[in-house]
Image 1 (cartoon, rainbow over the protein chains, first blue to last red):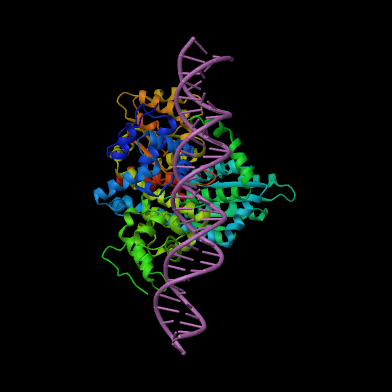
Image 2 (cartoon, chains in turn blue, yellow, purple, red):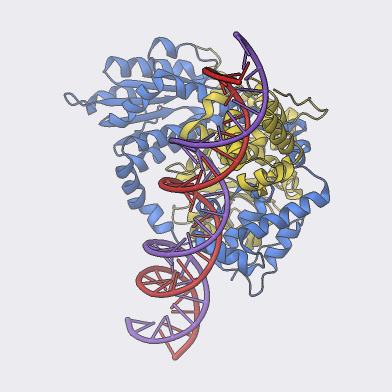
Length: 288
Length: 288
DNA sequence: TTACGAATGGTAGCGTTCTGTCATAAACAT
DNA sequence: ATGTTTATGACAGAACGCTACCATTCGTAA
């Protein structure tokens, strides 16, 4: 049995959930925590959606709410609304003050950059890129410096949904000469280059070499990049400037995730099977 | 045909309803007005209940919502849920038409998750965590599996703005025994653990060991994590579930970036100097 | 290990909500 | 007044949300 620790701001909902008689089970703790974290938008959820987001079954949600003394999800919503009315707060008002200040500005810019990705996804080159990555016999991924981590992460996650993905460490001396050694006749190969403007002088020669060797090249980069467009049509730009000490890489991460999702979507059953068989996930299923 | 006059506080919902092409019919005007007046409790209502309260038939409500551009009442509720995004990020629904469909939904959820980070930043534990990371003599960073890349990236970027940052590869056998070997009297040390629920059984013992050794522990995790709260107050939850094949790590990356920004902000001149001197950036200044 | 109880999920069924089709009523122009 | 267009409602089918019953899995203690 679990307990959820009281946080500074103690809402009536949180109090009620924490004090459920007999403590909480693992699933219940997850549900309770999720409910507390998402209290502000609960009115719009359904039992099924909560179940989906918390990874438990619908019925467990239903049972838990009853155990907590609500009359089903409907009853919970009524309680919440009553509290809202009482506090004279409209749901949209309640966030406004949160996004003031410097951090708020950064978050807003990042969120905006994420939404702006919709433009990239609409380009004809987008599905072309997804096809290239999905259909390739072998996919290479590379990226430098402050975005190397993203590139590695992308390679790791992409290899969950499809095989034959390699991360290329660009500073391992033999990179450029090494690519051709993998050449076999009529094999389709694809390079995904994650780039930011400051590192262009390293990225450009690699892309050019890859092109010469007949690889398809997909480039994900920031808005400042001007060279990639003349090398390959499959270039996607992400806003990274948020006036912080360092550029933001969040939106870029989101774009990489979307790419993975779409590649997986090209062969959904296979992807699902791979995810299921992925050993680390298998091992990790136990929550404790 | 009727029109609803704009009121002082113009909610996105009201704006949208008023601007329906071709004006409003009598019944529609009634519905629209009722919706605007009761916006705050809409989550509770159903098509039938709205019909009953406004004295029109259910289907008229349904039709009107469609004409206003919502996908039924469900769609309206979804839009309200995304009020954060709409209110702060896309005035004049810049991306509106782009955000339909599966990818649009993923992007919206990610953007929403980014804005929701404002909640985390407001917690008292937040500045405590920033202080801990900024003031520590040594910072350790770790993370597993699909978020290992983020952890590495965070370590790399954090070490641009402050020194003595180490990424711990948790599968290098000697991790747990290795931490104490760095112990020196009255040194302040801090562990930043990036976690997701499936990997808890690896994360928990590391955090416990770190605590036992007197390290401050900051945990960044998803909404499903329920164990971290009882280990340390400095826990931050990020929404990662976007109904894609894999969870989204974009918002988490954004949070890590914000942490770096704030840590840098604790000693701005020093951070700026470090960034300026960071060799890879120096070398990369030429754009080509 | 085996066995037991608790916790959880699957399936099915019921009730509710939502929407498409057709019919009726109202508004308007001639 | 009459015909035409537009708005609205009644009904029914489809979809969805919720919960009861039973099977399975998990955790724990001999």
